[in-house]
Length: 171
Image 1 (cartoon, rainbow, N blue to C red):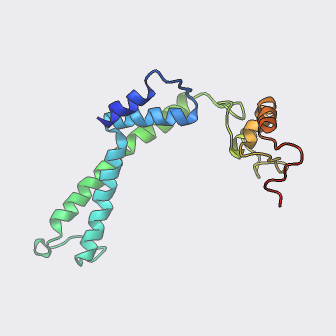
Image 2: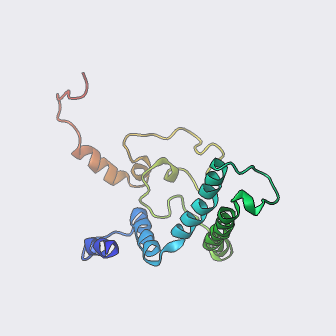
């Protein structure tokens, strides 16, 4: 039901598919199909939370095998199966890395979306060793956007400028 609420919220909206919206759309697809998030979540906690419980029950570490009378066999089996689930949940990630490395186009521009706002989008691609040759000029909360769109930044600055003689915030 929640999925339909999210879709209904966006229906006939004025959407712009910039980075945040792409992440949200990716989340919706992942949520719809159950995604690898749940297999990762269940696999991780089924492996390591179960080991925590076993340790709290007194299971010693680094033993090759346990006696059935110790009572650790069932939870160790759950932990083992969960570790395979955890490994399987990583396969889509590794596939994506392989596919991107083999078939992906290299990024040749500094800000591929053109609307980056934070400093990581203000440096060159690939970045120099210390990110910036000189310290960047920061005059707003969006220094990269200001750098790539100075005309818009100037209009925003003028719109938010205090009237002459107004000393609010300076005293």
